Image 1 (cartoon, rainbow, N blue to C red):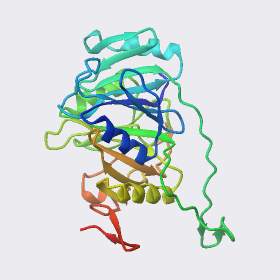
Image 2: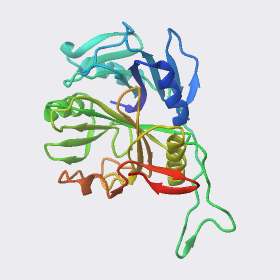
Image 3: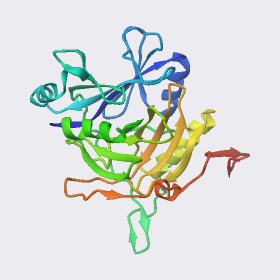
Length: 307
């Protein structure tokens, strides 16, 4: 099944204006939306859609309040879409149409599958200097006043029954296991994608529902530039900046008024079916090699750790 990545996340939000301001500041591109919706896109065309919390067309979610109400996966062709429709049990199917398949996973998250509308967004690699290997000579490294996310990389769901939810994605939809915290979390890759993970299932302290969505940016400079811009606009850091040792990615998470968090991400591992899944003990060091607990703030031009 050629599920190639994430195409759209749709939120039900209490304050459309605050939600729209968050995603503009985050660096997504606004587009007109019908029916009272607000639509924002990445450079590849993945969408973030905001709808009023009381919109009757929104599917239910495992938790009340502002949150993601549907995650849409991009599928490579009509044959793959038909195969998904044939494999999903009738008990989990929701009403769709000729262009989509809609379902609810075992943890209660609404998901859907559509023909891909994602496009390639070529990016020139940023030159870096290292001892004995200079790529940038007589040239300053880039500085970013704001991020412009390219790729919607992954979503994270908190679940009660980790094994049952993972079986649904792996056995029915062909997701591959990348790595895991045994009994606590599984990193899953869509069968037609090469990101270290497109879906992380987290089992912790009885939590349920959507946790965060992550977006790849061009380089580590953009992680910092985007993060400092968000901080300057008054948005609170959830965690970061920092680095995940499991996926190798640098990150910075921000609390999102639409629900959960939004993450800037750079330099995640790219893997194939030759990758051998690993098991990690769920410790703080396994989650983050290093991270500031609550972001950074500038005082009189000096960047200081926030306390």
